[in-house]
Length: 171
Length: 293
Image (cartoon, rainbow over all chains, first blue to last red; front, top):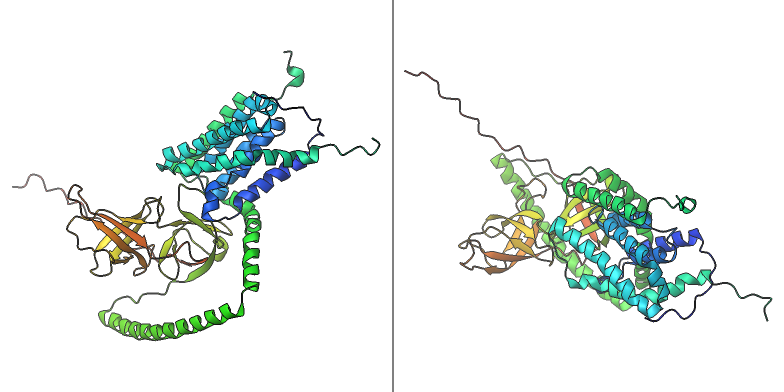
């Protein structure tokens, strides 16, 4: 496997930025969209939680994922604890695999991220199936593919505030 | 303990187990009991401002659309509305006359006059994203005296009923939600039945009708009012197909809801009527006297 070309030296993340990004993702998830986009819409909250679990495991972990899962459950009207369960499991997988994933180049991260998100969605579907005896259909999983495709963009965006400003004294 | 200096609390596996158990506890209590309603209502109130913010772009687009609408389309719409108004007026006059006649007849029969149920107008905030259920969220809640169990209708017919009322919003479960029962009767012949939602599609299922039942495609189903939730006589659905396959014990009847949940933003929430009197219970027969000679 190819390894990321070079390790960048980044500034520390501000905790406020993490919180802001998570709440913006939650807002994006609440945004009412047309039915077509609804199917391919990635779960932004899950993506952000995954990103921060991989890059800031001391700040964002299973507990944060669980709390946001509860928020999503209430906002979506799903069973209490359905997304909380899936998100905390996803956070655990991310914590276990985080060194491996952060070493990979962005195009290899795609497979890992998509797989982790698919596992998360499978937990949601399974919970729904057991509790309410409904299967949603395979199109539901398209959201994870979109999320995987958006991952490099998201990584670039979230790393922007961490990039050191060019030193004015340097020639 | 060499790692004590870098202690970070319990290990991820322990944390995961804790949170999984907590989620399972919540799931089970949510499916089987209703302890968590207040907690859910509290969180729903807390995220209500966020939901309103998320609605802003949509409202803004709507406002821009209103602003840039051309005059010709307005004139066209105005003409259409005037025509509609005239037709509706005529229909209303007929309706009033019939209602008067009906009141009179009811008085003659000594029947209880039907009370006009008070209602609340509400706007659909959004469809829930949960693919497992068919629910919508509207912007009126306990503040507007919305009660749980109230019927929800639009201008064409029944949409669903209020599942949960939060302070500023309420959750409405649609009649197309999986296994949501609605007591109906066939308008043509007064046959009583119950329609159930399919859940996945936007259709309804008329269950437990024997093969020789007098029902045809195109029949209109209206609420029978037998459950005390829906007032009687509201249109619910039209029969799409009737499949009489002698292999099954019952006919398979598919119906299409009359109300357009996906077409309009406004709905009407009817206050629940008075509950029906309790079902009379047959008195147990007194034990036969012993030692009868």
